[in-house]
Length: 229
Image: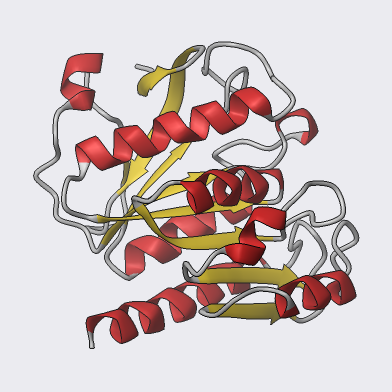
């Protein structure tokens, strides 16, 4: 049975990863049950966006999977979903505009399903641009994570004026976003911010996927500790 929530262009296929055992689950047998608030009380509800749909990106991409598991390990619930036209999601690729709308709807869904939980926006590559673009402007979102953001391909300028906590995981040998570009961009951002560079990793973190999960766990476990002081 396809698990989904209603999106702007039709149903969006999705999975929820919850802390207890970090088991990926569906959202309910029908739209009504999927939209009901969950009894779970996570540390935060994380909406996680996948890489570019036209280049094989899905919610099952290896880095996305490991990121979801890392968030689970620090007590978060993760909503990962396929953008329109990917997998069983309805609609078709909309060159970014529709994908931004998809992410906004995913935030709405997560906020309704986990009332009272912090809301975090995260994504990889193209998904990082989507998540941070939407997350900066949404007052409900309290933390942002970009994994391998393609800074030379998309406009991340909205981040420069943001005082929200901003986290970055970058490959040392990222061919789409050279480390030099990342360091220059990072220097322009306001605090709070943190950057982790994974030694030897390319844009897809081939051979270094587990290190991405470790970096996220370390960054956000520390963030959670600092926020609770």
